[in-house]
Length: 496
Image 1 (tube, one colour):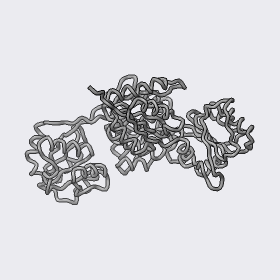
Image 2 (cartoon, rainbow, N blue to C red; image 1 turned 45 degrees about the vertical axis):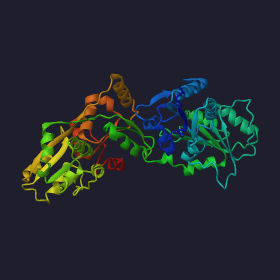
Image 3 (cartoon, one colour; image 1 turned 120 degrees about the vertical axis):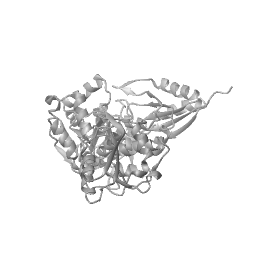
Image 4 (cartoon, helix red, strand yellow; image 1 turned 30 degrees about the horizontal axis):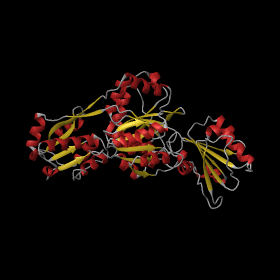
């Protein structure tokens, strides 16, 4: 019986920013049954792995290897020989100071198929995020890259190269600068050190060969860091763009439900923020109720269907599907949707809302329907089990028959005491600059999980979407510093 044959994908994860992972890398991560990853891989990238993938950490912590290189090679080979598809995920580009060549040789020697997916290397990406082009017609015609782990006995001559890039060289920066002076480089040659490049923690220090070591020591620059030496390094001060983003340096907590929090977090990250996802609501579908069965049976009776949220849309259509129905069965009914995201969700079911209020609240719908003749009309509102009664009550007062159909409920997520203690510590230490709330439920559950000790939130700013969410926060004894009138998360991002 022949041995099952697996394969290995050697994938570059890029320099840190998850958005710099290649499309090819993302695609193959979604196929791999086993993912072996390093410490410099952004955890956000692991979200692209298939849900049942076996995730194995093989990086370094505090400068110590978690697994030796030989053991990593053995692990790759043994998993592949089990017939599995294995992804080896390495920071940057695996063939640039990443020992990718060693791993590839070992894999091929054992007769295992391999595919190499280059990654965006920190040697170009980190300087770019610092505003430094490593080539520029006015300043250089060449550049060289070195591993900064070289010591006093290393042998390199930079005299003929205008731009030098040192990776992983912060601990040896004094030695590196000394050797550059000895080789004939001018003490006034510009040098830039970029720490945690492409990440929200990025910090850039610009100086010269003569003073950069002292500057990095005074500012307590952290690893990993990339060092750029040459005239182009001075351009960091004029071109530098990433650290000028409007929310750069801010740590923002997102409390939306898990399924939606990542999208909002990415929106904030695009403005330079570091985001922490702490969902305070969990969506639980409600299915197979007598009310749902009756509603579907009498579907032809409704004149209007009002969707107030994305979850209302997705869960309602799952209810329809469970009874053998779909969007075609809503033919002839007027559809009202609150918010752009709700409207976009309807498009997934080939429906375009007939009406969408200018203000994305229940009050907005009320303002809209006042222009319609609802007397004697029958209206269906698929929604959460617990929600404001303002909308159905107002519609009934206009003469409509309103049926509220519960298709999901919002619950408080389960967290361990240790997880909650870590969040409390981050808040009390001032590590979180801003907490965002997108609904009243996110507010109520946030304080249910963490309590209302004033000292805990003394250094925290709160931001809300919509006046109703802001009012709920006030009811809990805290005043929002920012309230976005425009309801989608994008509106809150703009307000921030």
